[in-house]
Image (cartoon, rainbow over all chains, first blue to last red; front, side):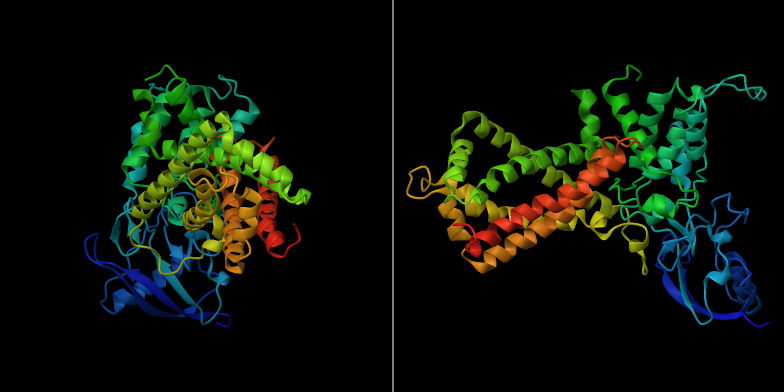
Length: 254
Length: 223
């Protein structure tokens, strides 16, 4: 079909966590501009499997921009050249025939590479496990308006809760800092009445776990928010720092 | 005191130290800039010398000077410490990184700019602080601060080093001024745009005034 593209891909191949990886060149032919970036990878992998080669390991799940699995650093940017999207929502029409595309995994010591483009984001789960929840037995879902919540609080909580935990913030940050992720997970609860009882304990525990995982500190460059597929705001980081100061200096909670 | 160990232990605590000392040093810059601007009175340095003498002899100012050095030392030490820690968070980097799309180069180069400022600071302290505080050249009235400035800035290379130092300062402040507020948690639609605007103009104007001093003295515009 006319308009289809031939591309050169430079993809990071790495057998496992312990071995050293390298960029390997691949050619893909006749790629439709309507394909998603992941579908282009499917075509490449089919080709590799047919040839008896090892297909490229990459994370993907929902392919509709909400699961946060498709971690690919494309041409120097998390999730590629478009703003506010995940890799599965990136389409080949964003590239031109003859382009060379470099695809690397998220780079952070807290995200060890499992294989090729797949990284272990278990550090995020452990941060959530440290305090990103409320300790009550909820039973059945309550009626929608049982707890009246002011619009501005509901909006702020929802904006923070939009975080899909993809790790693009860590990937984009020069310090591989997880502050945007952690602040979103702290604030989605800090704005709601259910989040109040453990608010101080939560922020301390989650920040402590974040530091323990080996993420860097926040330099406020703003790269995290600029690359975030859900456009989580830096306001969350400031709000978390406020809570963190309060938890350490004022709060009577342990 | 145990409750305050978070300042040393946590990454947010570390950054709060950077922000607080940074804001403290910004206040110092304002005072320094105000006092030195007295050379622009063009009165042969009379008013400036009086101010310099006051700053050098007043007990309160001299006590605050200790605090200033403490603040500087903490800012430098903590900055270097964070730079090392942050590098450890990503030991294998990207082969392609398009950082300029998502952030400003100077916000990613605070360590480099700070190191350049440290080199400048050592040269600057040797030129003026050392001579005025640790020798009796000025206290013994064989020379004045203004004479010292004229002598130092007669050398074109020194002027160039000072201008480069002020360019580093400008970019360091361009990020640091507003960043310190963000770290302290002071981010709100009501005042953050004002902080960013004030920060920008502060970062342009203050280094510009400082840089104009060696230039004006070198060219003999001030006598």
